[in-house]
Image (tube, rainbow, N blue to C red; front, top):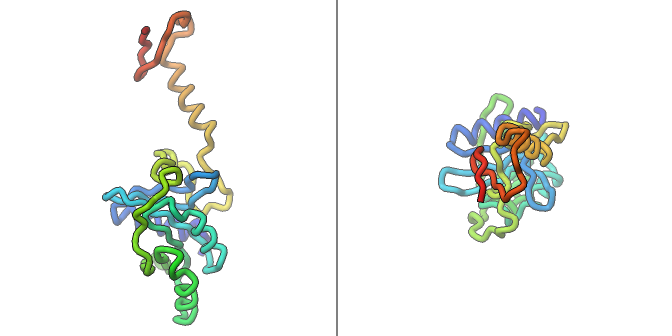
Amino acid sequence: MKESELAAVVVEWLERNRWDVYQEVKVFGGRVADIVAIGPDGASWVIECKARASQSVIHQALKHVGSATWISVAIPALIRDEARRRFENQINGKLHGWISIQEWRNTRYYPGPLPQNEHIDPRLDVRQFVRPEYKRWAKAGSASGIQWPPYNQTREVLAVGRHVLPVDADLSGSVTIKRGRKVSK
């Protein structure tokens, strides 16, 4: 199972459970979270996806400590009990559980022993970084690593701005733009 296929199953599962889901979200420090989900109660969940269980997915997820209510990883289902126990031991005390995905879209969440994070650092809080564009721009787990670049936001503002003021508008006085209308002070 490819990472993008695994992430698509997680996104679908979260949306079915009434979470707002954002993908490939650029967060504090330039890091990118595969999936950021905001629950109906305002709780935040960062989920890192990998095509196999490894230390790298755990380290990737640990970079988000202090930024969300829950931090977890999503990996393909571990069929052998021994492999499952070994992975659980690796994440115990570090993450808020893990999500297991089977090929036939059977999704199971294994909660970890950590309580939800009540003390989110306001500078790191992922909720301040989510934007509507992250719902549609790039799919989590895509090999291309595409994210919503800042220049796209500038392009959108300029596209709207072209329709706000006529080309011959007098801008010599103090002018502000409010909701598409020119307003002089």
